[in-house]
Each structure stands twice: as structure tokens, then as C-alpha cells.
Length: 454
Image 1 (cartoon, rainbow, N blue to C red):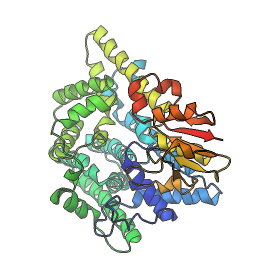
Image 2: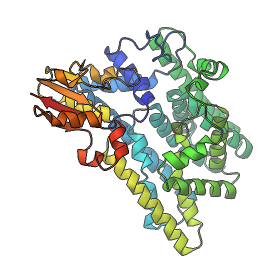
Image 3: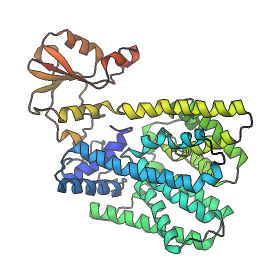
């Protein structure tokens, strides 16, 4: 539940809300919050929001007008597609990476915490990487040997899927371009390259056509991204990080300890296989991304999705039995810790709060908040949800909370409300006993409380 990054919601679900008529400021907001969508920029693709919009329209046809059911259905679709992608990858790469049939090896791959974390997202990273993995699995088999002919239509189709991954998220070109360079150097089959290029180009033109239908005029978002983000330096305005940022962010943000094994396995694989397609894809992606001053962890998700393959490769090549078992079991243990966390804790506590408020029996009751406005994310309102929620007022003190529902995310303030004999807590994102285990958790404002005051 919730979203990992603001873009996951405000660049995907809010355009859907615009198409549904709930958000009337998306392409008219010159306050710089939706700057990617206003008429003098227009650097966001419409294809993913339109696809989700048609899913929601289909649900409405059956009388399902619940925004949480909408999002749940979208996540179900993304997950099914994601499961297909990892099964297809496994089938295509098992002869390369899965030389040992031990149960630990299969557990590492099929229980990888990042698979469900990524696949249930509504982000462009989720859908684009899934499409990329499906296309890559086929193309590795197609370009892997001269004996693998494949029908021309099939090669064009998977080239189209590869192109769709760029249409959904144009930044995928930074991962796909090194693969084409590898093909030219090591697998130059002109006919196959031409067929893939036809499919890829068709997808690009299809994406531009969908953008044209939504804008009412032609808008080349790819050139505008290059112009605004790179030539004019808009990207650097979101922060600047050193070239070695991605090394640290892998260790820190992507399941510590498990991430250390991944980094070691990645270096080992690159050292042992300098001419492998994955080596060129990974090094090419990292080198290109490192040239940009602004860097984020999610930019390297197309690399991290393949983490189990490299870890399994490392384990298979460890000759010492004790070290082999230690590497396998330690990877599993820390992987399961993060798998547990993403399964049972909402990634964004505000969305969990919205769900509670939406299913309240009396939505017309007086609701106030003290402190941070729960209906705001960095001064942006998630109309996709708040359109269906009761109106909210701000209360500056505890003196005006009689006969209301009071919302806050400040622990100290919540303790004061608890001491008020007229108020009773009816919702907490996480159990209070968990929050009270750590003083930092109390101060992080990560927990939302709802109190019913008589």
C-alpha cells in the first residue's frame, strides 16, 4: 500500500485522476509542482496513465467505484505481468546461471524481496522494467546463437515490447543502448537487428501517437526531455551527487547485507565475464547514469532486478563448502527480513490512513488535523484519493477538538490527546507499542493517529 516515490503517484495516478475528472490542475498548474505536464514542457508519456484509466473504466462498468479497489486491481495486473517476467527470465537464463540445483539457489531467486516490491508498484519503473525483462529474455535467446532463428514476427513483437519499456519510461534507453552496442560488437546479425529495430521504432511511434491524442497536437517528449533535463540542466536542480553515489546507495538502500553480497557478486561476475551481455548492460548503465549530477536509487532498479542471478553465480563458483553455505544462508536470511517488511508494513502511512477514513461509517463527521496536513505530499494533493474522502479542517490547538475526529502524526501531541479524557484513539498506522520501542521512531512522524473526541 502506498508509493515508494512521489513520482509513482503524482506522475502516474494523478494523470489518471485528471482523465477521470478529479484533478483539474495537472496540465494547468504553473506553481511548478506539475511542471512536467504544463504546455511549455510536456515531458511525461501518457501511455501508462491511459492504460490504467481503461482498467478503471472497466471496473466502473461493473459498479466498482472504490479508488482502493482500483489501485489494488492495477497492482494485481502489474504483479501477474511481473510474475510472468521472472518465470520467463528463469526459463531463458537457467542454463547460464542455475548450474546447481540446490533448494537454496531456487529460494534465493523465487523469494527475492525486490520482485514483489517492484511489481506491485504503479510506477513507471515497475512497468518498464517488467516489459524490459520480458523482451530481454527473448532477445538473449535470439542473439545467443546463430542457430536460434525465431520467426520474423516474433522478433518484431519482442522488439515492440522492448520499445514499450522506453515509451513507459524513456530513461530505459540508458540500459538498452549498451545492449545494442554489445550486439553490434559480438552478435552482429543484421536481419535480427533490423527486425528488433522495426518493433522498437513502432512502439516509439505508437507512444508518440498516444501523446498526440491526449495533447491534441504533436509533442516529442524525447527531445524535450533531452532539452530540459540535460541541455538546460533542469535535472541538476533536484540535487547533485558524486559519481560513486550508486555504490553507496546499493549498500545502504537495497537490503543491507544482502546488498553487500550482491555488490561482491556483481564485481566477481564482471571480472570473470568481461564480454557477457550483462557485463556490458550493467557497466554501460552505471557509466551513463554516473555522468548525470542528479542520482536516485530507483535509477538503478534495472540493474538490481537481476541481483539473484549474480548472487547465485557467485555461490556456484565458491569452492569452499563452508563459505558457500554461509553466503547462501546469510543471503536468504536478510532477504527474508526485507520480504517480511514489505509484505506486512505499508510503504506509505498516509495512504493507509486514507483507506481507514474512506471506510468510516459516517463520512460527514467533523474531521480536523493538528500539525502536518495528511492530505498533502510536498504541497501536492493526491486527488485520486482525497476526491473520495471527507473534508478536512486544521485545528491550531487542543481546545477546539470536541465532537471531532482528530488526526496527527506527532507522538508527543498524541500523548497529550491521550491524556484528554474525552478522546479515544481509534486508528494507528503501526501499533503504539512498536513505535515506543525506539525514540527515533517517535520523532520521525511516520505514524498517523486518529482520535475520536466526544
